[in-house]
Length: 384
Ligand SMILES: Cc1cc2nc3c(=O)[nH]c(=O)nc-3n(C[C@H](O)[C@H](O)[C@H](O)COP(=O)(O)OP(=O)(O)OC[C@H]3O[C@@H](n4cnc5c(N)ncnc54)[C@H](O)[C@@H]3O)c2cc1C
Image (tube, rainbow, N blue to C red):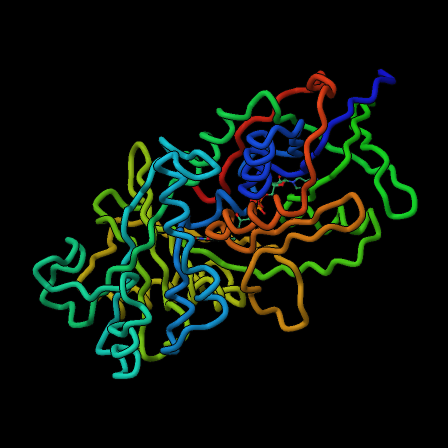
């Protein structure tokens, strides 16, 4: 037990993409910032995510731009700059699973949608793919739909978190805290082992965990949880597939969103989209049956014998509204000396970072050395 209080500019709670992104920015701008993670870095939504860095085309499937598709449009370019080491967060060396993302239909799409995909508005963001250039998985005479290439990319989220951890490990600690606060301002944080840390600004970047922290502090910030029931298909011979399957039947959302992950001994297709949203009402066996039926309808030429199907459930945590609709932008708001953050999407992390830095004043000089706490380690992903 010690009475020492360690003083910082900023203390971030939560080590998913939000917390690590902000820590990287703060350290780069000279702030004495540390991050405290309760379980394992990345182990929340970030490792559960499909890793798609997208420009929002999937929000335009009704054939028009929406608030969501416009605010997100620049994000692939921002991430590409980060990957090249030329943006504020240096991600040079992070594994890109796919440098392109596709969108395919099971049949002809409406003329309104095809005209929209070919329109000036989407120039440079969507391109129709001629049959001669189809990726292997679509080179079947049974594929009769349309194929588009988007300027999106897919990241290996484990590599992303490992990379940020490697850059910032001296400032990342394991710890569970309780707040001491008076009249809406946090005075310090008490760690389980008795250590006390304090800061000018406390950042809640704990994903779903923000709910409990907000409640402890008595802040008026609504959080919403939107559940998903994801499906994993494992099979050694599965081809790479990074694509949205769209259909006239449910044209406003991708019917299935596919990403492919290679492990030491197998390949895994990770399936989300409408399948995962509507699957919340199904139990595991029903969800697997439904996924098999959908896959057979969408890609009848594929053979899944020998593949292993499983499912898992996870919530998306975001700033809340009454409608349970996905917000269009990140939530970054100051409440006294606390800033509450939800990126809303992995893709939106650069926008969240910009919004956050606008709220920060200058760093102070000559603050305390890092506390004597255990270092946080990388977490486990719930589906791998
Ligand atoms: C199935 C799924 C697929 C998705 N796919 C995509 C996609 O392809 N593209 C995209 O752009 N977005 C996607 N998203 C959304 C994206 O994953 C999230 O918006 C993003 O990962 C949220 O990051 P975060 O850091 O806010 O939260 P999290 O990743 O959940 O991290 C929160 C961290 O805080 C820690 N924590 C919790 N409580 C405390 C506490 N009291 N003290 C300290 N630490 C605490 C947790 O252990 C965790 O490590 C997907 C989400 C889901 C669920």
